[in-house]
Length: 382
Image (cartoon, rainbow, N blue to C red; front, side, top):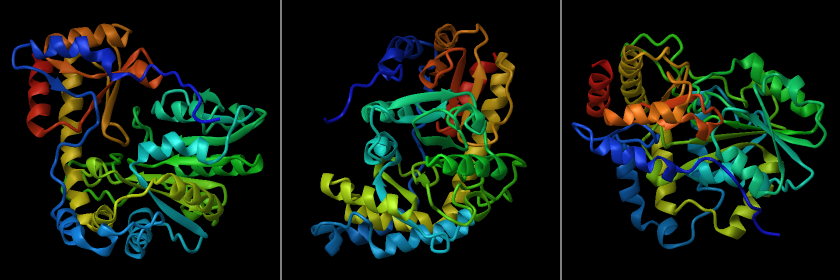
């Protein structure tokens, strides 16, 4: 059958006109729309990549399941950063070529079809919906996936997307709410798909101090108190793009239910969805370099604080997000595109909330440089 058609308002060409306006503004354009990292890749990662450049795993075909060292590094990271013992809950892992492809292919690799329903938050990352459409399955959008009554009795539900911390809203689910989702999904034989790509970027209780510890991270769906000591029916996605500025390396993984991982790994092997060998070595180094993660965490905490204060000065009602890397605001005009036009006149580009299912909102990314954030703050305060 192949891929099915998809439809989505998530089309960055739609903001081209606003970018032209912003570029003509005094001082030029400051792009706070796309969440693409701008900071250096850690030295540990670059050194590991160079050392592995002529390893057997470079000139030969790399393993789909990941090298033994990478798999060990993933397990170590889960233990150190997420309070999860993969072995104890019978979980397996598979590296992915970035997290977006794993999101987009998830419904297809789980063999969902036209009579199957995938639940997702109404306001969320657009690729959840696109991936479900590509598989030919049905999308069910709900206000809050933790409100299990909104989907538990819907015929055909096969999976539930959870995103905590959330892109774009920054919302963070408690362990209790996540446990409720896992329990309800198991009751109906559905899979919990937990996108935790911003797991170490949490700001609740942040003090703007160098002592803030990102390893006091948000609850993981594979944590024993959430999954009841078993990975059955739970898959967690994670990426090094934000924690280690490795977006261009395309380094991510799926962890969880060993039977589901085994099946997906077999298909991934056949279609060549494999991380290059030297990049696997770099990924292992990034997972183990938690000190660099702390440095990056401090950078983002500072930028978010500056951006929140500036947006308040401009007239937006907002606070520091609980997690993730974005400031999510309600448009002053009530319409994201009208606000986009006004912001473009002072050279600032945000991301329109319509892309995420909320045309009355906008998303501002803190992944720009310190200089860009400072300049944006100055313009917003005028």
